[in-house]
Length: 178
Image (cartoon, rainbow, N blue to C red; front, side, top):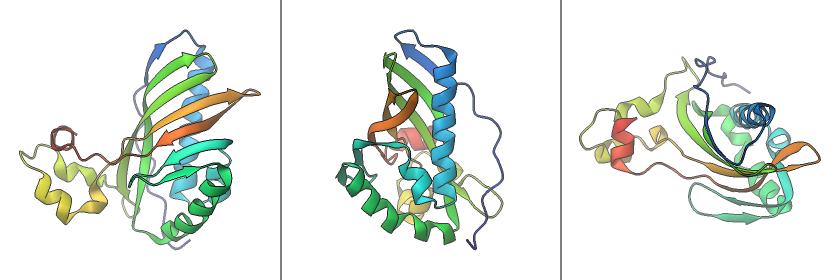
C-alpha cells in the first residue's frame, strides 16, 4: 500500500451499554471487534473484514445497496475495499452505544469519522459549529462522517455481524454539532 495509516487517535470514551445484563468481557470483545473492522478498513484487508460476518449476514451500504449472504458481501468487498489502500482518506470507528438485546445479540452504534492518512486530521471537523453545513457537504463529500449500526450475534463465543446498516450522516444539525 502506498498510503499510510493515520496516527492512532486518543482512546474513545467507553460506550454506553444498555439492555439486558451482559458481562464486561462481552462489551470489551465488541469494542475489540469494531477495532478489528477499523484495522481491516484502514489497511484494505478484505479477508480480515469478511471474517467478521456470519454466513447469512445482511449488509446495507452507506448508499443503500443491500447485500445478502457472505458470498454477495464478499464479492462487493473484494471489489471496493482494495482500491481504498491508496485513498488519502480513511476512517476511524468508535463504539458509541451497545444495546444487548439478549446476552448473545447486540445492536452496536458506531461513530465513523473520516480521517486524513497524512497527518490523521479528522475531516468532519469542518462541519462543527457551522450554522448551515449543507454547502460544505457538497464541496467536501469525503468529510461526511458515518453512523453505522451493527447487529452482532455471538456464535460459539465469537461476535460476528448478522446485519448492518452503514449510514452517512446527512442531518445538518448532527454535522454542525459534531
